[in-house]
Length: 82
Image (cartoon, rainbow, N blue to C red; front, top):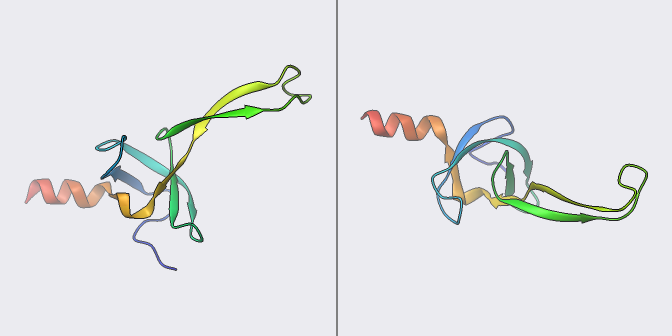
């Protein structure tokens, strides 16, 4: 499947609780039609005990955003200039 964005692109979120925010794409998940955007849609992940986290931990990391809810930031700046 081909998307209009790829890893490393600067994007703007069009819908959802993160609407209007910008970030860089960390990963593209084509089977799920989703992308992970740096610093957006943060979720809490409960980690089990391990050598790195002897007592366990709650880690905050990026969640996924549907690919239809993002667009390239360059496209938005060109639109504003016209």
